[in-house]
Structures are given as structure tokens and as C-alpha cells.
Image 1 (cartoon, rainbow, N blue to C red):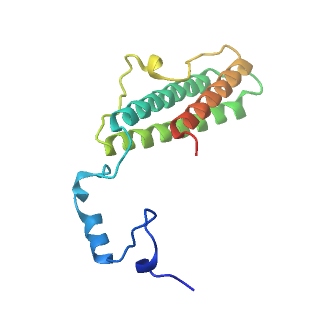
Image 2 (image 1 turned 180 degrees about the horizontal axis):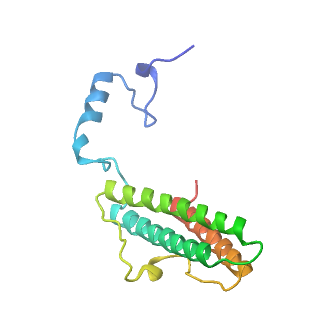
Length: 154
């Protein structure tokens, strides 16, 4: 049997008995953006961590683009295509991070000054196809570990 919203507990023991009040609360201060009174995180710390993740993504974009242009050899064409695709994916991640930073009332830091210092991943050029692939795999591991740190234990 389906329960109505009036019968479902809100999780803190309160019952959602007034749907109209719930709807009214949701509409209040909507123009102020994503941060509501119930937002419990340290917004400045979250923005700082998101900007570090943004720097990491931007460094990865630059590394993948360099590798795309510098890869050479008989087996380089399919690898170059992968480098280019990954550069696009990393840029998409960077765009999403920048958007979220703005939603939280912060400013995305795209400044090249200190970019590599803010990034968790390194910008390693690589001089062979093998070393380029290896450096990108290392950077992906760093990004994954960094993302897990951002999310925390769930």
C-alpha cells in the first residue's frame, strides 16, 4: 500500500503534515541560489577544495593536449585520439566544477599563476608514447584518490 506524503516521516521524527508549507519553504529565498539555511558544510572549505579539483582538471587538460600534439610513431594515432578525448572529458569536469563553485557563491580560480601548485596532479610532459601514457595513468589515479577524499566516507 502506498503512503501519502502526509504519512511519511521526515527522518527527524517530524511528519510532513502540511504539503503547502513544504512547498512554501522550498520557494522561499530561491533567488539566493544553491546555498540554503540547511546547508551544513563549511562553504569556504568546500569552495577551496573544489578549486583544487578544478586546478587538477585544468592541469590534466593541458597535459593531455600536449601529449595529443607530441605523440608520434607508428602506433600513435589511436593513442592520440584517446589523449584528445580525455582532454575533452577533463575540460567538461573542469566546467562542472567551476559551475558548482559559482553556485556556492565562490569564484572559480582559472589563474595560470600557481595552477600547478594548486593541482593534485603533476604536469609531466613525457618524451615517449609509453611515458606519456604512464604519466596520464598516474594522474588519473591521483584524480580518483582526490575525488574520493572530496566525497569522504559514504
